[in-house]
Structures are given as structure tokens and as C-alpha cells.
Length: 200
Image (cartoon, rainbow, N blue to C red):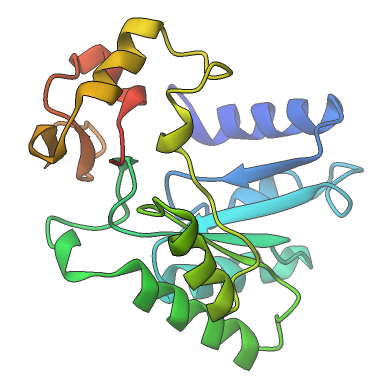
């Protein structure tokens, strides 16, 4: 994108104009993103959330956004087993979603943000996984890849079959993304299908 900041401003304002219920900011720290829409009439009424991969990232976001007088309505904590771009380096295997979520939950409680739901994501495969996080105090869980093979998903059927056929050996974390961040995807994914990166 040429002018990514202005592009983001236009897209978020257009979404709010259209009456959407909320926006989840992903793929980066978004330290100045709330400021891009702070003059919109729905800035304080639409739900606004942020995806982070550490308590430090959340702290930076809240500090930077403080002048807008607006906290996130929810926080998605994405762990190292997420599909697509990862908020980690190639040392991603040294981190565990459970530990990151525990840190974030402890910090939001300590800071008095207990009404801000914390939503774990990335590597939640079963109902038991979800229950574990709910028992830790999470406000919900986010599951994505498991739904890519559903009838409601817009992926072509032949792509869905690749998900069905894939086993653990077909998954890799590589650095082919132009962002410089590692990403998890199927080894047989054509480069122009990067948006279909799985977490299996």
C-alpha cells in the first residue's frame, strides 16, 4: 500500500460510517491507530479491539492510545501456534500461549482493567483447550483454522481438501513474508495463497 497510515484511516472510518459493530486491529502494534478515528462520531460506541502477542505489546498500545481517552473493548492474545504471520521471531517455539495469557490476565487485573475481556488465539484445537483458558479467566477464545473447512467458509473446495489432507509434517514456519515476520503455512501453499496460512 502506498500511504498505509492514510489507507488505514480511510478504511476504518468507512467501516464505522457503514455501521459495523466493531473493528479488531491486527498485524502490527497499531500504536497510533485509535488516533486515526478518534474524531469519528462512533469512536466511543463501536467495539474496538487489538491483537497482541505479549503483555509488553498491550502496555505500549494502551500507553500510546491514552490521549484518545479510549481503551480497547477486548484484547486478543495470539500465541506462537497461530496461522499466518506471527508476532514472534524464529524463537517462536520458546513461547507458550498459556504463559502469555497468564501474564496479560495478571496485568489487566493489576491495572484495574478487569472488564476488558482477554481472548486467547492460536493453537486452540479442542473444547478442552477452550475450557482450560476459560478457567484461567479468559473472556472467550478465538478459533480460526478449524473453520476454514466449513461450508460457510469462502475458500475453494480444492483448498479445503488440502487442509483435510495435511498432517503435521506439511506445516512450516518460514520467513518468506515481505514483512520480515515469520509465518506459519502449509509447505505446498502457492505464494499467492499466503492468506490461507493454517494453524493445524
